[in-house]
Image (cartoon, rainbow, N blue to C red):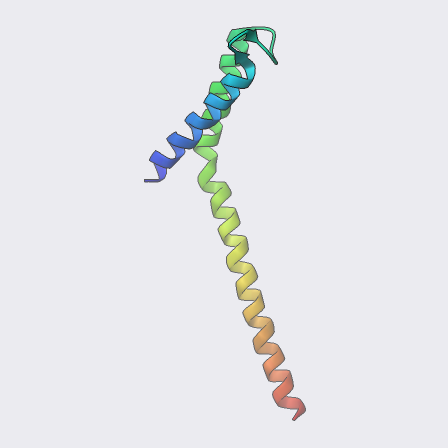
Length: 84
């Protein structure tokens, strides 16, 4: 499933960059159409390969944040219990 999602995201990135670089009226952003294709394909491949790492980093940050919140709640609960 992860590879399928990567292919879809890479293809989408490639398509969007191709539309940006080589529009229907010729090259828009880059002067050479071949250079536009190369940049779009390389960027699409990078997106397809890198998306699991990016999602992993986001999920790790969320898990760490939740764990830190739980620790802070437990510490506050213990401090409140000691002050009684």
